[in-house]
Image 1: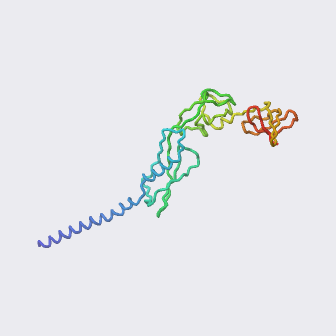
Image 2: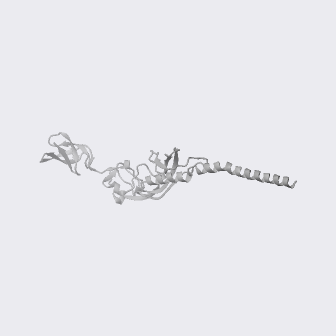
Length: 246
């Protein structure tokens, strides 16, 4: 009778051990599946660092780059080679972009990660109202900071970009300057009397004429010769001289 009890206890113990071992074996594939998934943090880091490298930091400060969180249910195969990141955005928007992250290993996949970029940018503003055609000098301009989300399109970030430029239209004080609001300063004005320098080989002849269109240095403008009455195309050299080649 005692021997029968021992046998029963032994069988129970063996069954319990088997059940425990079986349970561990059942859990093992779940643990393995988690280990074989690519880390979300690794994916977000790849996207963040790629976006950071693409930023032209000129005129920017307080730069912060953050990739969006990924769906916790997302499972992608662990990549046995380094992740690749690439650009997908063509909008020109700096504050928000999308970075592609892919694995080119045995189990390839591609994921697109939204990335937000925050920074303060230098923007050129007018100090006072400006007239159309007014020269842009350091005395009438100043630098202010704007967040990326508020940058006007084609803004200008340095007064140095405006050397030799003038306004294309009247501007109010405290206006952020953009490329369509400025142009190269026009040295010659329409209706202005100019000296026409005619060049042929080593011979130069000077005569007077009238500009029929305004122009900046290097522009080709029509100029009427006072002597012949002919209109020729001439290159603007300075504020009083144009050149014609024969």
